[in-house]
Amino acid sequence: MRDHKMKAVIPAAGLGTRFLPATKAMPKEMLPVVDKPAIQYVVEEAADAGIHDILIIIGRNKNAISNHFDAVPELEVKLLEKGDTGRLERVMKSSDLADIHFVRQGEPKGLGHAVLRARSHVGDNSFAVLLGDDLIDERDPLLTTMIEEHERTGAAVIALMEVDPASIQMYGAAAVEAIEGSDAVRVTGLVEKPAPEDAPSNLAIIGRYILPASVFEILERTEPGKGGEIQLTDALQELAADPDGPGVVGVVFRGRRYDTGDRVDYIKAIVQLASDREDLGPELRPWLKEFAERL
Ligand code: UTP
Image (cartoon, rainbow, N blue to C red):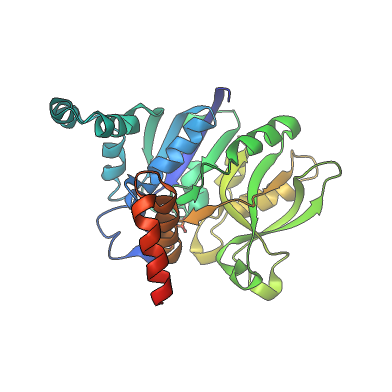
């Protein structure tokens, strides 16, 4: 793994309405997945891919996120006194992962609007976007493949995943063409949350992107779209349709991914990750088997 100059942006300013009332006073990105908040997995993923400058877009009630990535000296001293070095390491890790910056979105006007808030921090270079509630299992690396694809082609790179055709309406959907000699696909069109009969494919956009800085100019003039929100998908559609631009390439992900903003997926993430863990799995797995037999 090598270090990148590339910066990462993590939008975490959404309202999290699917998770109310849990998200009334707490951001959904702070919901614990086993014993870490979801957003820490996302920050760790960026750091593991060699990205050390991370900008988190925060909104109302999001102070918990900035507090989480701060050091807590009094807690560290207490754990040190108790000799609890395991926990001490885990507590310190969240403040040592990367150089983390924050900017407020103000009003949650959509993912495209959230990404636009990163413009002055990002400057003129390509950057990564990782959604703060979307977890990619660390055993199935995706971001590094996407960065390599971007470095090779100069294109915007999006992550795609095959979904059941009936559920494409919850995602952005991509029309794609094969690229000879490559596992990646050329994206020829994108549409946000299409009805299944209008979807160009069952390839859904998931929460990882490598974007050229030119996306900011497009976002600046992108009108509100589906749901009255400024959609990142609409700006990417413009990039995909521009014959003189760098184009959009898709990397099809076939690994484990959890949308922790969705209640069922959130529960699946906890069960899967906890049962795979060395410290929790041995106790949890037999119970899960027994539980499943009783269903
Ligand atoms: P979602 O659509 O999953 O977030 O956005 P949401 O709007 O909070 O979810 P529900 O439907 O109300 O439950 C995907 C990502 O984009 C961020 C969210 O925080 C999430 O990480 N986002 C969305 C923003 O940062 N700002 C926005 O205006 C919208």
